[in-house]
Image 1 (cartoon, rainbow, N blue to C red):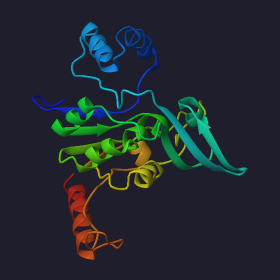
Image 2 (image 1 turned 90 degrees about the vertical axis):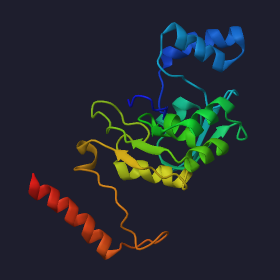
Image 3 (image 1 turned 60 degrees about the vertical axis):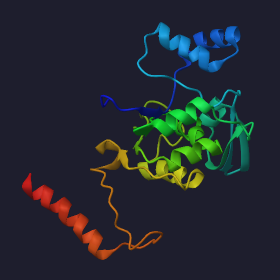
Image 4 (image 1 turned 60 degrees about the horizontal axis):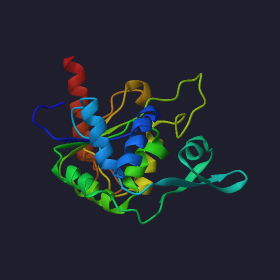
Length: 226
């Protein structure tokens, strides 16, 4: 954490915390008031905000060997197998909270994940006004890639794939999202992850040979100095 900085973090949650929250929501009928109350009880540094005041349900359409399959619900999406073709929230026109949008606008840093990629990470980029606020944010954006699945457990939500697959999902459903930094352990990438501007020009799908050479030289020079 950086002292004096406002940091907004998106990622996965824990089911245990939902129990006291549900009780407070039933009492106050206000999810933000309930979250603030729990935060005060637990002496939480910072503030937890929901994406929307409306109850949301996630739905995915996957392509399987049997054809298209539609699954609905967080657990169902997490356990579904196949190529994800569509990911939506129900209701589709859900509105983000004003408090959440203000927190995004005021942030100095924004971090995304780790968490279940389809059911916990991507929903933050599905609600259109919130996705727009995130993509247009001038603050530094940090994307944290998940660890690969433990071999003793069945992989869920790209858990058995590499970093490129996770980035491709974001590119598919939020093509305007750009991160300033991506953090991944070497066990995921097989080496150090380097991000550099190496395209010929904006919108180009080809490398600029001089930029690529400069980036390579910087990497090689750093290795020689070690």
